[in-house]
Image (cartoon, rainbow, N blue to C red; front, side):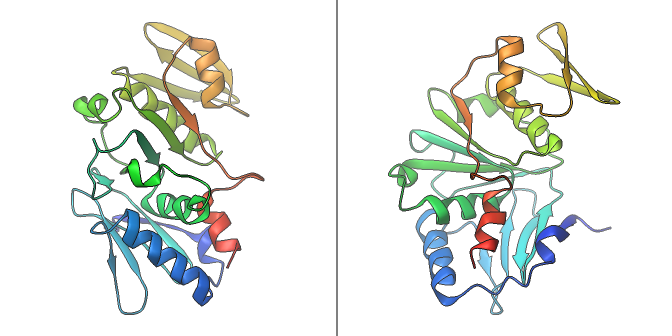
Length: 218
């Protein structure tokens, strides 16, 4: 059985980075993510989650880890003032490459990605206590729902969603809410439910993900 999911949208690109971009990627890997990845002789990157399942990036193909574990930066989950919760390890790398010159707090930050099959652990709240939460997720509905689930879990709550035609039903803190599925966002969830935390979405201008932007910048 294949434990990984291939994101063919990236695989359709040739993804041969120029030497300058390659240098920037590996500099960021060594600065912020040392010890969290393995690089093969042919440039393939593997990010091993806590259950041994790997996410990989090679020759333009991004394989998401169908993992029940987590991946996190070598500094640990409790280091620094900011926590970056990412849709994947490569999304974290892409964000760091593209934002490295503009942000001053990356050295004092922790990074985590939850596997697609991960049941959010009960002690997940300790990762976020008193910290700024930065969410690196795309605009697709599944990614937004996953980001919302993580946000409420970081505060010790659970949320359930059901999609019924073009309506999204949400059960949260004993109440049911209905949203149009199109355009659903974390901010709309917060406005409707009164949920408050210190999280915010980080996305590149013009849509897509930071990994998409990195690949298009080659």
